[in-house]
Length: 93
Picture 1 (tube, one colour):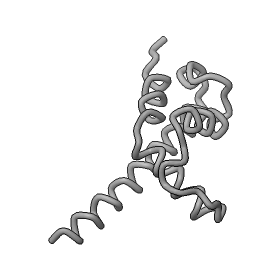
Picture 2 (picture 1 turned 180 degrees about the horizontal axis):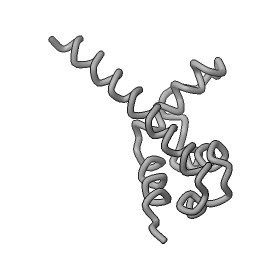
Picture 3 (picture 1 turned 90 degrees about the vertical axis):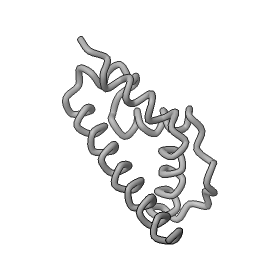
Picture 4 (picture 1 turned 180 degrees about the vertical axis):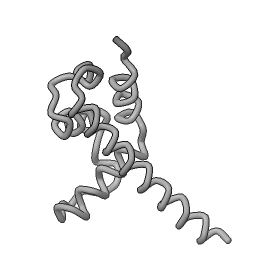
């Protein structure tokens, strides 16, 4: 069985932009006092496993509902990143 999603989840948690996304999401969604840079790679992994309902990233490759949740998280993060890059590009013009 492929380790594609487990590997993708690991890369996502190592991405500083994803951790910043989690910081901003915590502020926007929960009103948390979370400055950028708060979420560590370990925090991101814990959050992702909880959100996907798995105990280990390796479960993502064999659990269709967890895989679907990971894809939804990736899509939301990619939209957030695209909006962020777009707004930064507009300011530099």
